[in-house]
Length: 82
Image (cartoon, rainbow, N blue to C red):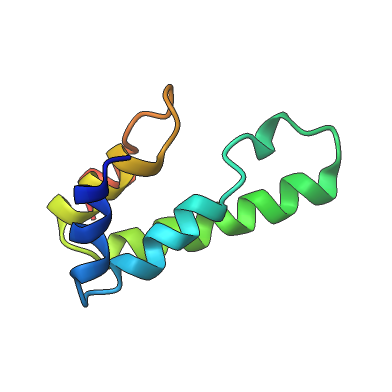
């Protein structure tokens, strides 16, 4: 991530800083775990993350997704329609 993107994210006051932190901490690969407790925590984290993203303007949530989601994680349809 470039230094410029960090400045854009952290200069905003719409909650995107908190959502960016959530995305950095999220276990993107929780669905691959054999441990049900890991899966449960990951699913809970995903639900909270999606709800937080839905509260942001479309352009902000798209920017955050494109910045923090690992390769192979497409922008979810549920965030297009929020």
